[in-house]
Amino acid sequence: MKAAVVHDFNAPPRYDDFPAPSAEFGETTVQVRAAALSQLVKAQASGRHYSSGKTLPLVPGVDGVGLLPDGRRVYFAFPRKLFGSMAETSVVQLQNCVDIPDDVDDVTAAAIGNPGMSSWTALLDRAKFLPGENILINGATGASGRLAIQIAKHLGAAKVIVTGRNAQSVKGLAALGADILIPLDVPADELKASFREALHTHKVNVVLDYLWGPSAECLLSAAAGQGHQSGEPRIRFVQIGSLTGNDISLPGSLLRSSGLELMGSGLGSVSNAGLVQAVGGVLRAISTAGLSIAAEAVALQDVESAWLNESSSRLVFTV
Image (cartoon, rainbow, N blue to C red):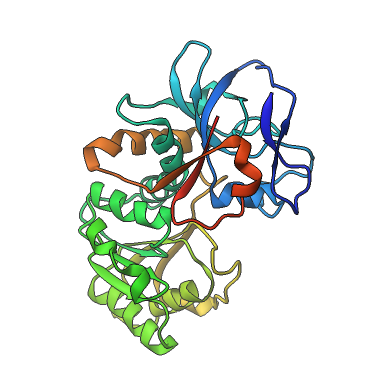
């Protein structure tokens, strides 16, 4: 079969021949129609992600859209190692497939699955979000963050506060449902003051953090040290991505003097089947909530040239 094939962790995949998989017990083959290029896929294909394997060659891709042998059109995820979704055929556990509504096209379903899952799972499975609570999204200008705004509002958030690189980057997020915009390119003391106001005045209940690094460190420090006699407010901080750094400094005193509850959301913190079911929720909400994502379809044979392209749209390889 034809596929995007990684021969070297330091180079983009090439459109090449690769052995077609066959299904084993509990598995099903999938005739792939579309597969999106996410930050997770790039990290795995470069050997930098904690879930990356070491065996080469391999086909990248953690999810996609395709047809099962019985003709059902499904979103699928977590294919068998080495046989990723960027190929003519992939193979997955049957429980890791979910039907796609008829009014959702292949490219949209492939594009929205992974980024939509990130906030849906973080809110419902990890933070146990309740309608009427207030949310802060740290890093809301990318595909995942923009969807997080829409999903938070759909799930009943009373107020959504967002951050972005600068005033220009957060421009337009209000149209998606953001109530308060916080630019990150300001002096540290000014940023901390903005975070304090968001957390304590606007009473943020849940933080979705796509950035980590300096902004997360500043945000966490803003949650502590208020000295409320009745105790600091409870804030569930969900770590989702590390786009601006893998490490922060976190003094123990910060946790002792705050109502912070730190948790992560990603591969391992929720079952694979649970993550796929979350995507099912996102797909069903596309029409009812008007969820949208900018997507660009690219033929799989152009994978090598398109792999490193920087685009504001989610690239989706079509097969």
